[in-house]
Structure formats: C-alpha cells, structure tokens
Length: 142
Length: 155
Image (spheres, rainbow over the protein chains, first blue to last red):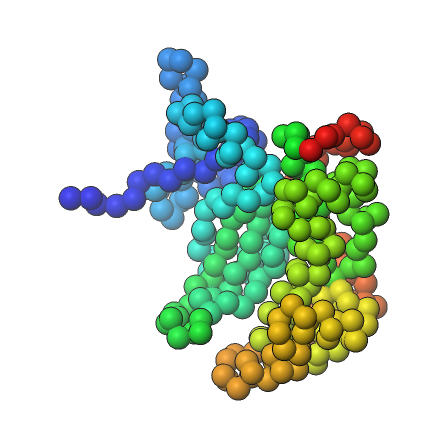
C-alpha cells in the first residue's frame, strides 16, 4: 500500500544557493545534506507544515545522462522549468511580504477560476506557483 | 546558441513579464539582457519562438484580457494599465490577437456574472501610481550573469 508522497525533485544550478533561497526567503527547513561516496550530494528540504514531504535539490547531472542534463540546464537557464506549486493562505499578502524580501515575481496575484495565483522565480530559474485556492468546477473554465 | 546566453535572454523575458506597463523598447530590453540589439532579437526569437516586441505585445494583451474579465475598470484605464499609449493601437492589437474588441470581450465575460476585482485595489496595490509612473521593483535576487560582449555570441 502506498501511504503518501514522500519526495519531489526540484532541479537547481547550485545546491547551496538554492537551499538558502528556499530556507531564508520561502520558509523551508533543511532536512538532509549528505555527500555519498562518489561525491554525489543529496540535499533535501521540507516545509514545517508538511515535514513528511521532502524536496530534493538536484543539479542537472548524473543520474541524468548528458542529453537530459543539458536539456534541464537549458530549460532552467531560459526560465521554462516549473518547480513547485505552493499553497498560500493569502496570496496578495504573501506576494507583498516576499517581494519586500527581494523575491522576483513574474506574475502578480491574479484572479483565476481556482483561486488567486502569483508566480515567482527561484534563483535557479524555476518558476513557482503560489495559489490561494478556492473551490471550482470544470464549468468555471468554459 | 551558447549555453551562457540563455540566462541573459531570460532576464529580458522576465523583465517583459514584470514591466510590461512601462514603455519598453528593444534598446531597453537588450540592455537588460546585456546583449547587443542585433543579437538580442535573433537569439531571443530562437530561444522563445517569437521576437521580444511580439512577446511584449502578447503579454500586454494577455494582461488586458485578465483585467477585462475581472477588474472593474474602463477599457481606457485597462489600456493604459497594461502599457499601451493609445486606445486605438490597443483596440486594434487586441482585436487582431483575440478575435473580438476589448469591449465585446469584457461584455461577454460580464454576462457570465463572475466576480470582479475592485479597480481601486489594483491602483491601491501600486499597479500604477496616481502620476502614472509604475513603481520600481526589487531585483536583488535576480541572477546577474554579467554582460556579454557585443558580437561574442553566435547562435
């Protein structure tokens, strides 16, 4: 029986800088930071409200092959890669607070059928979606 | 295209997303990217599938659609809010890209009775100041890849 989702991956360019961004600015906590035998560094974060779900920060390299790693790196560089979807209690307030800390938003809070949504850039080039959810049905999109 | 160029182009792309209300031109955008104007247009189009100015226009129209659906503002106010200087140019561009006029688009959505964001909130939040000058934004966490020398990049 599968009990829950325990791990998701966010690709980054620099594990230290990205860790700092998620911890210092977005409110994540450091979970694991170990380097295994061959120099492979395993870094995970967790959110205090959801400690059972770890986010691993992976650089585009092994176990990706060269072609895949190049693709991921290019997508990060050009800003095409989506990172996490994050739930917020008050999107406009969070937008103001994070902006004041220096977080770059590429979309200000906007009304969507599913709630109020803003989009920010992390310091690797991922876009992250912040959504203050509200109930919706498929009809809201037609 | 060399790998090192993409973060430069992304800075310009993000700049359009964030500052579409301001009068942006290729001069300004290529400076944000740190790439010569000539290379900027070609490499931006190669990376994103459309020219910077075309993307800027689409971004402004997309923002206008959003405001027309949800904000309690006039078409003229929305036209100015998304960075167009003339209502005529806005209406023509909008109709061309969306397939109906801004007014028709707004009325069609209004008929659905969806909730509207009060226009005052958009002004209050600083989308546009009374003077019409967009507020500046914090940029210290934007990655700064440094300038690319003119002509150093061959896509």
